[in-house]
Amino acid sequence: MRIIGGTAAGLLLKVPKGFEVRPTPDLVKQALFNSLGERVIGARVLELFAGTGALGLECLSRGAAHLTCVEKASRHARWIEENLRSTRLDGERFELRVQDAFAAMTQLAGAARQFDLIVADPPYGEKNVGHRSTSFAQQLLDDARLPRLLVPEGLFILGHARRDTLSIPGEWQETKMLKHGDSIIRFLSRRRE
Image: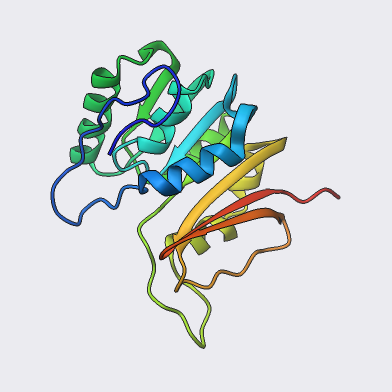
């Protein structure tokens, strides 16, 4: 896995062996960042369920003003720090929060923090035919704090498995969907009143 664009393009990212982390594949990242285009430049970015930090570090490489990564597992947080060092991206524009994503959202909302882009590609949920999804992706969509963390014109980019059928609450408006293999990436904005 590597950074695919920007100042750190071509540099490899370290990924733990095994199935503890499921990095966003390079082809999916390429489609995602082609869709975002210039929107990343100067953006304040929040990456939830950061894993190796691949999506957030890609944003930094492409000119994001600041990145806040949230990863619960301290082992994985060390990978993010190591990837930041190996890509030689500006650590002054980077914040790592080693905590649960939902606890972080509470604290960030309490501090009135807002972001231009929020990206999350959490662990995949189970197939949910005949019942409402209980996946992390659905929990993020259902969380009332998340829309408050986005600036009015901001974007929430959510990755999930094709087999995980999500319900989009009324606060969100889907603007785009990308499909690649078992992965779906949804682009969501705050619904205007």
